[in-house]
Length: 447
Image (tube, rainbow, N blue to C red; front, side):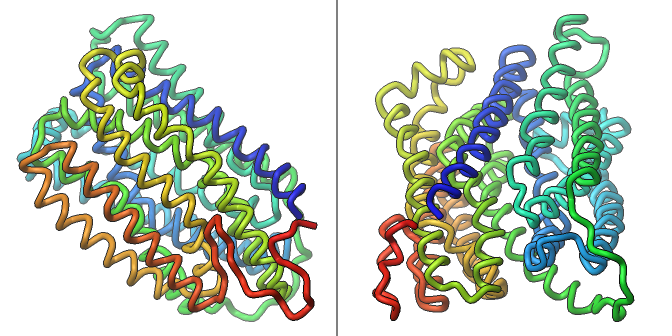
């Protein structure tokens, strides 16, 4: 068990390390070549895209993951579920585009003012990015369901950032900052191309390696049940996404685009503390669903404990580095103007390290069909985050946003851990305390 987890963890985490590094390189390139103000507008739009993608990328895709993982192959029901998800992705992209256009024309924030002259270009590009990203999320869930977590994330971790970085670099090398096009249009054009290439690459992988179940007569799909379940999963995941971005979004309404760009760099570096946890979570979802279907309680306990320990081990170094050399790191990577982002990054990274120590309580609850409970707890955490942001951001700027982010993260994950222990009977934390099972075997001792 442990050897398998470590082997898959290394492959998944290795890809995420490279992908996260490339993502940081994109942020560095935007900051150094186009400035903190352009980075701020870009970050704000990316946050809104992540939230708009939730119904399909986090709701429907998670339901598809459960369906594929239960059988280990893409059966007719899973294929039909995937097709419905694709139609949903188109609808979401259209609705999001119309809402975005209205927000740009009616908004008075610095971001809205900056985007208003570019709306005719930016809105179609953002719609295309949103559509391609949702399709990629459905494909990724299918590959994760057949226990191919590493190859599932390769298009997003490698292909997408490489194409994006290449597009930004090509524009800069050919034209410099004065491209003849607004830098925001250049950035989103490159991102749309990168999302398209990644989606096509991922689709080719899925067709070549995914086992297909023979088509047999099926009962009519229970669409209402699917929509209800996907709605609960999307609601929970949407609150998670909003909880992760609400500090950035609220900061954008109180601060300049320059400070917004600085905070984006803080988030980008702080999120490195969670790369191990996120990578391991790709293993956890599939394994929890499979072990639950097999009735293997001992395997669930052992797997959750080791995943939490590996996640904590990966998270711990970053807060230490930021504590002793945070200013130097940010000045070296982004430039002298970004030194102010070091302390917010340390605060956020500390909260993420605590989350890694708690383990995958949320995933454990979701795979046991407690998505409605998770949604309610996430809503409580979001409410706390918003209240803290509104109280702290006007007085303390991005430092207040970081404190709100960290506090909400710690409270939310502690509550999820408690609920997982009570509802499922499993301590998902790195401590991994459980009563000895009836077989007499210690669940914390690996096979």
